[in-house]
View 1 (cartoon, rainbow over the protein chains, first blue to last red):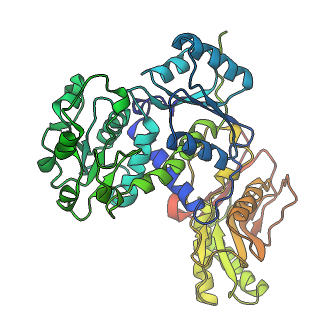
View 2: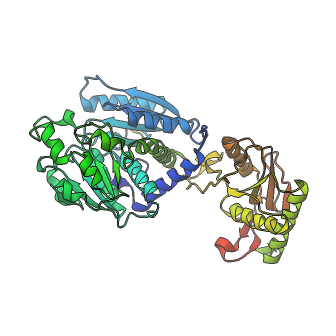
View 3: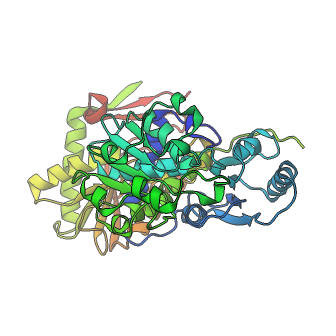
Length: 317
Length: 175
């Protein structure tokens, strides 16, 4: 595996499965009273968050702590320094503090790549969401959650049918999931109003549908996405009510799913908009499993990146 | 390269270890076997099968020690191996750890730490197929298939039919 985790494209299918297998083994160890594992004792993990986050930051923090790493939370919210400058200054500070891994979330697509390629730091960089680009650990924890519900899937997802529904345009979760699920062999259908489908969709190995009701017949997984109002400068649909009627997972649509189908959502949920409260709380929903699996998968990623001999990275001033 | 144990000798050694476990623990009521993957796990299952013939069924599982190793930083990350703790658990049990070769003792130290994460056994015993000496920690085995004096430069290879197509123990000259 590469020294950084910036994109799902950094992983081969077998490396991704390796991470899922590591997470499975960690789940067996952490059944029952979870004590700290000594594996990353003396390593420092910095959570560098330029954007709001609850679950991802907490998830990375508890993953690092369960492996006995030291965790520094660096919330850069409110910084008004221009982006390139501040990222460099921050990176050099982190380098001086001796960070072994930097978990970065940033509103600009490509920020994690910039940090990794800059030569400012020798730490491993983990992308925890960059703009509308990628969120690889979310895709890995989603794949882990799917695999735990469909035990037939071991080293590939051949034959699995997945519908990813909603705000594809602004969703880094969707992009990372499409890359990972198709890499593992799943059949992915994108469902959204035309305004929320990215222009480059033809480059993705997916089917596109504008009709939610027909697209979710026979799928194994329905992955709902959050409508990202904070990234919407223009209006992409006439009203919330109309969006909800066309692309919200309400009780009628939930009941039309196969018995074995699971409903996923990366959170935070807009209840009543893209997903109704009944659907979010139904027995088909694996939303809470996604959260707890997130810690296991991030432990696996940290272990893969930091658990072995240190990389001898060159650092330029 | 010299073969020091053949298939028959390995079988007899494991059977003797099984008898010693029953004798030492006055039965099997409180005994749990935990093999250390990869080959210790197979040996644990084999000893459990012998115990089944001699004295009755005994819980058997595996415990991976990778996350507790003290040499993680010396090599690239290693894949984790399966941990399967029997449903009876290890709390208050007499746990017998099973491994193929006892050398520096560092694997067993890591295994003791891994056990500590799971519970508090009443006692921990150690069964190994081969004790080759050169301990770096104050650790000894309770049950030994064969003591093999070696030079620190030599390598001891254990082959088991479950993954290596044959049962044998060999000593190879050092690199």
